[in-house]
Amino acid sequence: MQDSKKEIISWALYDWANSAFATTVMAAFFPIFFSQYWSAGSSAESTFFLGLGNSIESLAVAAISPVLGAIADRGSYRKKLLILFAFLGAVMTICLSFVGMGMWQYAMLLYIIANIGFAGANTMYDSLLPSVASEKKVDFVSSLGYSLGYIGGGLLFLINVLMYIMPERFGLADGVMSVKVSYAMVGIWWAVFTIPLILFVKEGKGERLSIKAAVQEGFSEIYKTLKALRTLRNTGLFLVAYWCYIDGVDTIIRMATDYGTAIGFSSESLIVALLITQFVAFPSAILYNIFGRKAGVKKALLVAVGAYVVIAVFGFFMTKEIHFYLLACCIGLFQGGIQALSRSYYTRLIPKEHASEFYGFFNMLGKFAAIIGPLLIGVVSLMTGEQRYGILSLIILFIVGGVLLAKVDEKSAGSEIEAYRKTK
Image 1 (cartoon, helix red, strand yellow):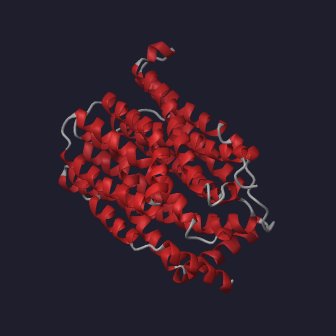
Image 2: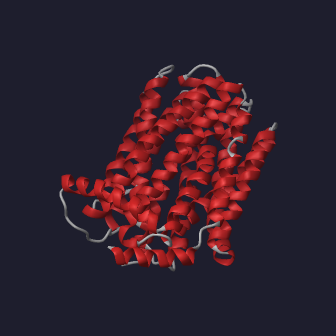
Image 3: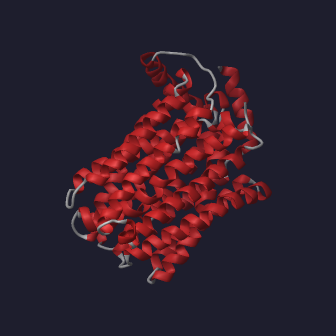
């Protein structure tokens, strides 16, 4: 039953669960630890290998996302696949605790697998949104998920930061041990807060196919979906727009601390900036939903894309730690809004009976974009020896994404969906 409070809260709590990985591991400790403890070489080389690792993970997820979506639709395996990927990510995160100094290859391998778990589970999680929320509440529920994610991830991150700054208060030897314990805590947090979704969210009944049959049907559905996008012009246009602008967003999330480290900011200041982002983003995701209702979801998305152009320019000229804090505030204001409204706006452009399949493409394109961004910033940094030019190069992605998004027509999309259904 849609709009059940228990289901909505249980669904949204998965954002609370996995955001600990996005914040403590992906955005904060892994980039810092990678360059300062696992050590991949010089600052520029470390940025290159970090970007390369993120790109490899993104390529792997991009390759499997549409298959996963189609399999989930045909075999009703959404929750099963979510559990598989979520616990894969949680276990690999815990394993990071055991990687010793200088072993950057092992750290990167575990990080890549954990990211695959994170992204694969998100494909299934996003595809459950139309089952949990009606069209009337979908924007609110999507924003609620991101808001809970920011506050949940932020709370655990705050504890992890205190452990890092004052290890002796927590009975830990030093900051290194604090970070390793933090990885274990993130994995456990992720696993435990996935349980409400497992217990209370219903995915609806589908064909009970075997895994083998579902895989075969999945590959068939990929071709059908690609073919369907010829009819669903506005859906395809939005996907390409999303592909462009979310590249810049994801790259900033993943590479911000590495960038701050490269231009000489202390680890403590970078961590404080991330805390600012988390706690600014928590109310902002909900407030941006209100702004989206008043101004229109597409207009709100265009405003957020424009804001990221300003953020990229500001990042290029940043020289002081106070600038990094201001940048963190700006990112927090728009990060949750652009993610949540993109996810909910997409539900208006797809046939709901094929939600997992189309969300597979949604995540696939997001991941293909995330291949380009980190690799671009890494290559530019390696070639120039200056990370600032990598940040500035993201502007073109936001501009192209914004121009394409402006051309999406939601009313025409509705007619295209009805025409598509008649062909099925």
